[in-house]
Image (cartoon, rainbow, N blue to C red; front, side):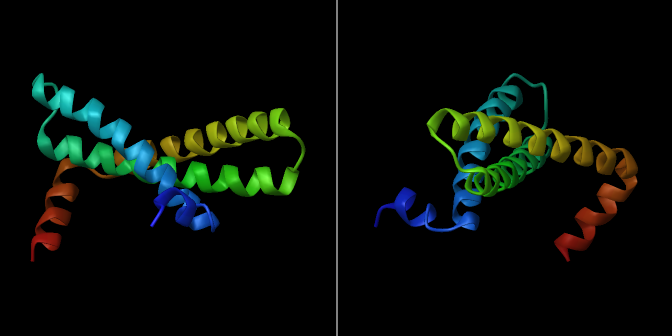
Length: 116
């Protein structure tokens, strides 16, 4: 089975492919930061998860926009970059707001609930 060909058959599949690539890039960065003592394993996993999800959403939104706009290669690439950048920016700002609303006690409570 060819994973890329399989995932490219649907918008959600394209989003999954974007999440895989974005998550891999974030994991590499976070692995280094963890190894260097800059972040904990928990922080690395959390950030990698957020980045993977954001990259997946941005990729899927970009694919939909490119399909709707159409056009040649240059227009498609330009549209993809602009839309994906905007979607990822919006995702990141939303995550910042969510993180600001959750203080450490809320996160500890959520961790306990998940562990149960």
